[in-house]
Length: 318
Image (spheres, rainbow, N blue to C red):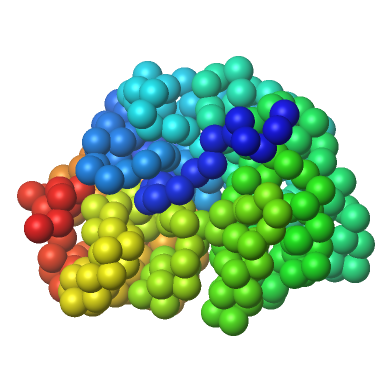
């Protein structure tokens, strides 16, 4: 399929959480309300499901299919769904991709297999072959997830360019390289390819630095709580309204302290706890090995600093 016919994600695209009941089964009603909240946030251009924010590492194939089905029940054609593909196996990744296509997803978010952390960088063809196989499974466009170097899952710059030039279905990357200089280099070079590939930032803790580099959108688990603030920030930079960007950026700074302050591993739990405090989720259960944080005083401080209340969460920023 030619790239001209492919959906290319842009703008603010929150990654949805996965609510659980006390028995750690999926809370379907809470999930549907959460999807509805995010899809109904003014300025949101799509949703990511079955990603890190949804604790996809704990979800069975059947649960991932259920998540897609529930999501499609709650959105219309104006909210494209990007479905995460998280797998240790190329064959299983292809199975997930076919499920996503059959279920109505518009795009795939492709995580590299974790096994490649064992110096897969020394065999770049393994990354190339994986994304080729995923592209062979469906006609859906693909967002490639670019990880930090310390994970062992980062594509080198040369390999990233090769993959993007070789596989027409790759229309964007979700950039989490965590290196500002490399981030800017990727933005400049991927956008300048003969067939441009969009850079979508997921540097949620430094959007004030990332967005002005020219990214074409934001994919972020933090958007599960602050999608409206991300929309306001992205629009402010597009309109070259720096005072507004700074004012919104101050609020985002406080919010991401609530989510990402050490220990970083607690971010899904903290986002769920934030939405419980804001009256948007009934509980904040996470599946092991993750654990709840139980630090309401700290959370309340940062939510207050961010100006997040039950009335303001998801509301259009004045």
